[in-house]
Image (cartoon, rainbow, N blue to C red; front, side, top):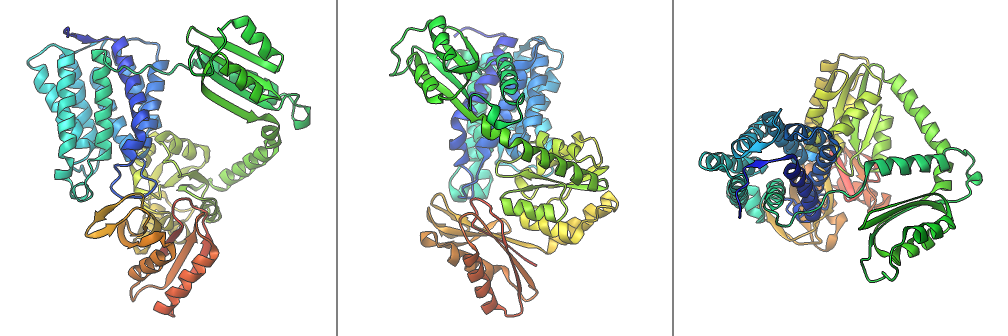
Length: 560
């Protein structure tokens, strides 16, 4: 294999976009490495979305110097960072881009230096760095790159050493972190970084290069413009001639349904008979269609004659237009809430319709859906949209702490994070510590102080067999989690039994109030039964029951 003496803009673009594709392909695999066998382990998803944002920014950068492309990638990762893994990944590329600044290309030595800077920046970003994680993998990988670059000017050799060291470091993570060794998995974030380096090596060596995004940004803008013209021009849904905004993407001459040779005029003219706002664009491999029609099925079927469908999207424009009035009302309510929150506005992450309502009723100015961990940009936007003078962020999930901390540095106003690990803690902080007219630091301190007395519990279903701290867990067991630790496992998915056992473990002689939030997979009867059981344990306890509507966790509870 020939020597590669520098990374140009072409190679760098392939590396970044290959990494984004590789993470997307392996997201489920990374998710399954989550130490706790809960159904919302999402390291792979978070790293995929974060890297996809970085790749999007890289593709949009017009300055072809590698330093500029690295800076764009870093910016995209920063704004798209989700979860702790995504934030650390963004910090690796932040250090990398700072080292590569103003470089037209990267030599082997410069590439190694950039990786070393990435490792250093990532470690600095974490308050208490833990070995056996993605940090170990980047440190060992960067060190190997540094040593190899002292002896070789071959970028590919440096990249191979980087990858080999990353894989070795990943294999060692169970020996460095007891929780990983007990469960028998490697670190999920470290696995994600290894996949990034595997993609980098493939892009540089010409092996298994994954093509970038085929969507054209200009085309997307044209589609959106045409769609808006067809929908927003008429405010009465009944005036819309064609109901369905239909988009398809077809890989030409591929698949089992292909039976027509592509001819642009023939293809276009048939679609023109089916609706309006038609846009057809193609190259030798792909054709993309946007059309407003009454028969999306016919559009889809027409596409299958010319190849394999890669993408199908159908929106009912009459329904969209009917929702416009509701959205306008929601906007007015949002503006009213922002006006109300001219003092300290609170931004809270919540999951479940009932939980979101509870936070809003408690005075939260902006509730962000937490079913998918919000990015740094999501949190920044939410803070800035409040129009307040000061803000407090309630992450309600330790996996969001780092993104929240980054958001503080990027907002337009003084902002602090109250490090609530659960929604239960967040609600208590609002009810007992929040003062919208108080001083920011004093109020944040008061909110942080009251959550110290909140015990948080949750019940869900295990998604795999494992053993944690001697507790044997089978796939399908109902498990009870107490302040981040699995303490109960009940066979046959017996949620009620797990909830009862969990409550018993959470109670002590100082317990006074138990609040129960039942989710999508539970009902009020289950919550009532839980409360009745609690009364048999202590007849002086007070109970509150709310419909939280949260997914994945049938029961959430707090004890104060």
